[in-house]
Length: 491
Image (cartoon, rainbow, N blue to C red; front, side, top):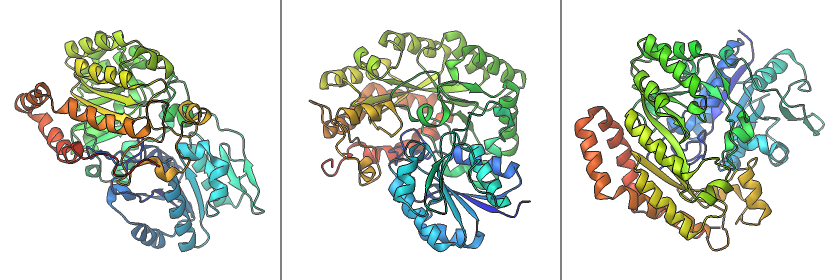
């Protein structure tokens, strides 16, 4: 065991602040994402012989004072703090508090925000010594090795750091990981460090675990943060055998888990691989249902094969009902394809969670009405309507900045005062307040339809396994349904 101890921290912020999802916020349905990337890095560090304590403060309901107490007892020599754009100022305050509380500690930050703004981060927070840019599993490991060996950080790829003289140095980029089978199972890290009961995705059966079978996405949607900052525009895959082995591990070692969520950006982008995975899971007698992210261009054959292997639901980003808007965000799909996909999913008996976004380039009141009409016509099992959230490092952020559509560059304003989604993008003829108000309206219009309510009651009666998920999400969700998201004017 190496002498250096490491604290990997999902820092305290709003209660149930879901930092590691694509649009970090407090979620109205009570969703709480796993700190999945931080957990993978934790596993790599442990694989290398380091003693690591992974602390997920929002999931555990820990305050800053409680985190400082944990850190004081553990006495790490390295603290790795996950970040996001909406929480970055808070994350810097946490870093400063830890720096003041601990002796001889090195603090580094990871995540999409600091990847896009490494120098800004170090300039704003003197407590932070280093920032990992991009995919950081091995960057964190190499920083730990350097500190353990008394070496400087000049050879660590993918790192931006501050020298003892105060100079900010950008080391060369780190190549993306090609052999994903060499990474530990993230579910093993969950078992050692986290309580799976703390995590909830409203589209999955509770409790669940989230894993990644492949990193990156070949598509170039302008708003999507992970491929543009962390994982890249390719699809690097674990072997089918390795993925099936993790399914078996979860079933054996985490018997309370009722479902696996495959958190790849788009599992079904490689339909041949998806069918091969289905075949392997069936051959092994898999009994664990699973959910996956998908595009709306998957064949019936692929959906059917996956359903036979345990696929229960796919999460799909439809985004807009206006073809011009879809083209503007480089979605590379047509509205007509959405209906073909809907029919294929219904035929394959796969549920669909539909994602719809307001405030994209070219959106108008008329295009938003088309989006709501599309949602009703597609009629997915569940739907979410959220305002455009732009993040440094994405094409969407550059578009809003270049056109002076951003109301503020104060990251504290990325969320409402309750920590909910809002937007700071106001286009001519469509203000930020209108966008958020439309999302509230669309949510009510969708979920209060007699057709939808009747279908949910029938689903509970005919599919009892779905009842727990529906009731758990509804308790929190309906608290917000009639409450405006914005209590005050946008900044």
